[in-house]
Amino acid sequence: MGATISGLSSGLDTASIVNQLMQVEAQPQTQLKAKVTDQQRLLTALQGLNAKFASLTTAAEGLAKPGGLATLTATSSSTSITASATGSAAPTTLSVTVTSVARSHQLGFTEAHALTDRVTVPATQVTLDRFDGSPVVLETGDGTLQGLVNAINLTANDTGLRATTIKVADGSYKLMVTSVATGAASDFALTQTDGSPLLGGASVVAGSDAKIDLGSGIVATSSSNTFTDLLPGVAVTLKPDAAVGTTATISVARDADAVAKSVKSMVDSVNDILKTIDSGSAYNASTKTAGVLMGESTVRDLRDRLLDAVYPAGGAASLASVGIQVSRDGTLSFDATAFSQAYAADPAKVATAIDSTGGGFAERVRAMAKSASNTTDGVLTQAISGQNSELKRLNDSIADWDDRLALRRTSLERQFTALETALNQMQSQSNWLSGQLSKL
Image (cartoon, rainbow, N blue to C red):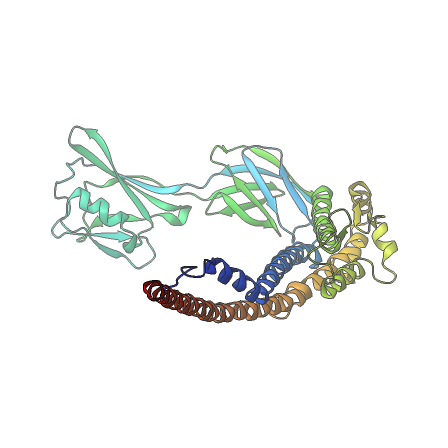
């Protein structure tokens, strides 16, 4: 930008005049910036609404799948024995008695040494035998007790063992090695490479399987303290304090409260979306401002489709029977007590009204919510993409106006500078003429 002369000869504040003229020139850009602000608010609102529809899709999917309402809870009469159930379980009761707990195989070696003593002979390797027909030779590096511990614990060696040294006297340590896994099959041996005993041989605490007696001559065995799928969909776990002889009654029953809570969560998500749309589409008479979503036909259509998914033709009665109804304000109400009573009386009928088996409430809502928020062709996804394109176009136009206005300012400043320069020259000539006349 060239130098400017503000009012040097004219006495005018030409800098202020230029600024005022530029404000007039910038009106189109100012309008564009205001439009960008409005479009950004709309984009943010659409993104928030899209997130709510995506969340509703996730909430509905669990209930919509066949068996989605088959929520079962497993309980145990003993604090030392726990149980869990999945959707594939069936209501049942069984009694279990602990006859054995799972333990790791452990070796405690006889000889004590300093950590720096050489303990492997004749080389620096030892042999690890898991009794699976494939013994492994471990390189200890320097053949010392510490080197042996490091080799056993080295992740890259994948021994499945954990070694530690026990201090039995000052500067004197014994080696203890324990299998990471539990069970009778976790046994192993550590020897010198020539087959001779390592560190004078070892005392053995044999690994053992966990066993529980279910009565009627049935005994279940597990290499760990967890019995996965003891019954279809039912797992039983023995806690560390479970003692041999501990008994427990395991009960697997339908959890009506948990199902009601899941359905209520989905109803709440539907209401949240309805209220968000209503609030964003409302006109505030006191502030004379319209909601950010007012006039968005796409959003109005989504609201109508969501309610249609809740209550399609002929579907109202079946939902009323499970405690779901439309309130006066156009949102949904959920009666958890009525739902639990209906579920306890006829779980299959309630499931038909909710899940995809009968094209129920959750399935209809899931399909509608997914069509709105699908990441590739969802209605809101496409609307958001359109908004982003429009914002880019507007911001590009604003950037173009920046260049245009910069040129216009430069032009105005040059014009006023030329004016001041010309006035200054005329004033100088006038002063010279006045001086000459005064001499005559």
